[in-house]
Length: 271
Length: 252
Image 1 (cartoon, each protein chain N blue to C red):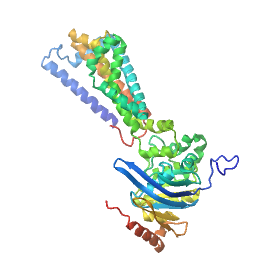
Image 2: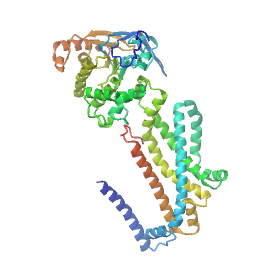
Image 3: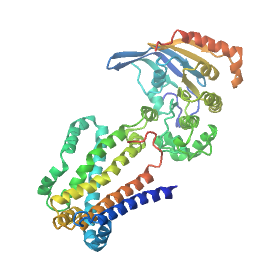
Image 4: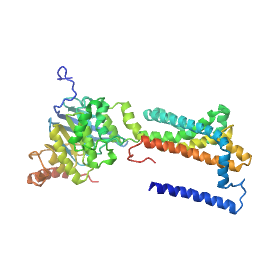
């Protein structure tokens, strides 16, 4: 509505968008009283940037991601995705979302799952070729007709990533997408994600509780403090790109993860 | 592999029938008390015109009740899931219907609805209604929270959430209820015929009992059992055609 020129349809706009979170608080009302998940959380993410949110379980990082995605509404503060409120950005399909479990619909084939967002938007017929291209991008060409139960955990997450990308979002929001995968698959998926990120040029906000994963992937890592959640440390990752797994054996990499470990040390919750 | 499994099942049934036949012959069991399988088989062939006349009636009543009861249950489950107020109002009524003994309500329905198809269809419907309602509500609600979040992110409207998420995920639950309903609908129709009917398997059972035609009684019972089995297999085939994916959590 603001700066779109005449005739600009908005669909297929590929200029990446940034994210602004300013003084956001989130209080849930539970049967045992209000619980403050976030208080005064602020962060800015530049277009095309890869930023990770790192923190222990229950620090509010998933909540923050859900506020950006307009799955939840903040009790205070301001959020903008690509210069718009999250609700507007959601309806304009500015962002895609990848869940921890792939959340594929079991009665749909791989291709049908990838086409779901377009089907709901009413444009599935035009998107078929694009969906096949995306399956190629995530390395699943030839699995179009397979059902989720026939795929491994890593393959399901690839489908979920293709599904999130099918609307050509400017921002990708990822909630511990590889948290349920084994170490070997996870490393491989991290490399794949960097490749996909470079191919699509989207902005990525990535939630994880693994320091090495955050350092390997990100331009910047934000460490969240728990109860109430707010940004405790901001660590720019000064490692050259493109990165390959060998970077994990460097002193620089170890220095980054050590800094994150120190920041997280005070945050471990007594279980 | 499959052939061998079926072969074993058939062999088991044949062995049972042979033992039955041998017992009745060896101990000279009077055929009006326990007829031998051979006599039941002969009766089945000789009385087939009579049985055939009656089986069609019961089939129509059972299928009619199945469609009515399950159809109503599915619609009500959809309403329940969308309106908690309606659910709170009508759920006790549904439970009340469940607790009424079918055999006790049958004479009342015959009084109210006459001697024709209506009371039998209604009783068959009542007997299958509640299990399907409960299963369908559970199926519609058995949706992963993250799947609902996905629908939210995709800006799906209520209709899309229903048709693309809730309804497909309820189907395994629905079919497990429908499979149970096949047998109970046949039972419902036969019980209703006992109370007041001039045709149907239930009517034939009453007549055969009063006239001491034990062979006919057993033959009719066997036909009723085959009817329920055939009905069950039709629903199983339908399930195989519709639910082609492997459910992540198999419903009970």
